[in-house]
Length: 296
Ligand SMILES: Nc1nc2c(c(=O)[nH]1)N[C@H]1C(S)=C(S)[C@@H](COP(=O)(O)O)O[C@H]1N2
Ligand SMILES: [Mo]
Image (cartoon, rainbow, N blue to C red; front, side):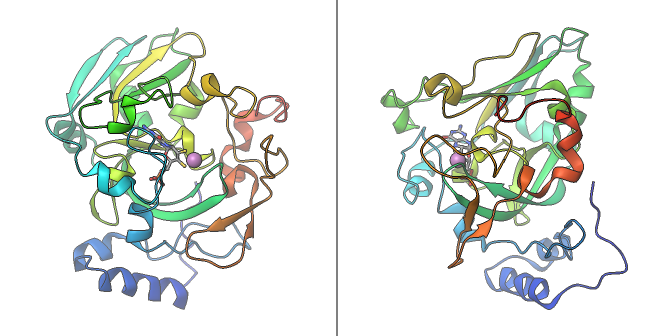
């Protein structure tokens, strides 16, 4: 993992971004908890978080609507408690966790991550979350646990987009077990030092920062360890457009558009998209020997 290098001082831009967070109503303690500078590979500019309203008011969350700028209003209808998350399948110790018990047991850490949507927009978010590996280790996966499937909430009474068959509900995602165990893979319960906004997937969503955004499933209720690759919502809906791996790759175009460049929310000009969304040093070795244009 790329930890901040102690020899580097906080660049002014980042310092100013922290002050803007303060101005946006973050408590002092919360702002102090944010990393002073982002982990960035050598030679790359440090990450600057997007303002919190940008992150909570421009969302893909098809359980509510496909209209990104309206999700946040509809998502306020979702009742976030009581909420349980079950961990089962190929594990020695299956368990259903109450969400608050889960976040108490595995104290969330701060992580500043890029998010890159397949549609071309991108942002930088200070999440709080627990490494998925910690929760999986507690469950003790058996030798049959080769993949991890995630299932989101199905509650059409509150998630009004689920009244239409836009996707085959509930939303499902999956990772290979080594991807799930990778230290960058986070179960997110907060952002900007506060509770996670409903529009971003409260009370619990995934953050897999080297993959396109759709892999980072929101409103998780079940985590199931399985032997065979599970079918995921997007690869079921459009297999030629959305592969199982969905690693951010500027070299592999989406069938309908290029993936070479991205627009960070709030900026005027596009930036080049980086292999593995900028996390190649940490994760490229997971895919050595694989043809990433086949396993896209
Ligand atoms: N349950 C669920 N999770 C989801 C989605 C969704 O529609 N439903 N959309 C995905 C997509 S396409 C993206 S880009 C990210 C967006 O996360 P954000 O709204 O926090 O930026 O959520 C992902 N997780
Ligand atoms: Mo996305």
